[in-house]
Length: 291
Image 1 (tube, rainbow, N blue to C red):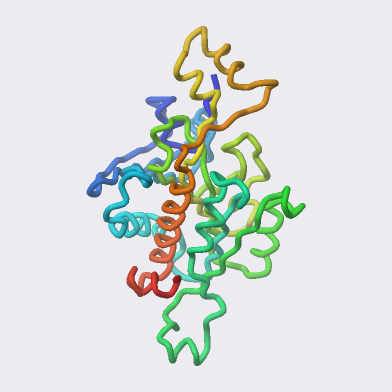
Image 2: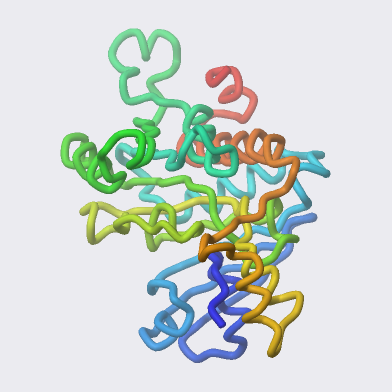
């Protein structure tokens, strides 16, 4: 049975020992970091994930334990910086629908990212901001709001700005409830907007955009059919899936504290992006510039 997940780590767990996948795990304080590399086409097809690098950070639940966010921001910033070019303009795109709370992670994160492309010249030198790396930020909305595919809009902006890289932020889907709000995934393979909720749009990656694409996200939903099949399993799985899919409609499950999850996760991701892109500034300095 197919279990919907955007997390490469979960796909690998389901496949267990699989040739063509290299994986290492480290622990930094209360954060577990897993680096997974898919190096063979056969493994990519089996996992349903493109060839490339995937980094997963498992952290204490954002909605329950928000102590020492500075350490988590610094660790996440380090992983983001490792996947991006060290120089050049970076375009940050927050994907998602602002009208749907579990899907609002990308736009909320974009609101926290410091846009600096317009800061230049004598004013920048006089204020000490000439050390800022050029960053452009965009929240493109969704097809139903704009009538434009997200990929089409981003491609147009990339063609005009010619960034060194595109960093996209989006809410993800997990197959396990205990990973919601306590997992962050980074990847250099791009993203398919809406894939987590079964509404995949054209893929956003280096092939379609013409520049390196790094994706970043936190799982905020689980497919109800996946939960039902996991709970009952065996011969009862199909009946369970039918029971939670009335009239064939797919249902998604999200935590009741999803508002808090999105608020804190977007702050975590946004400030980590700022720290990754502006290493010459402290977290305190960046927080002052963003507020």
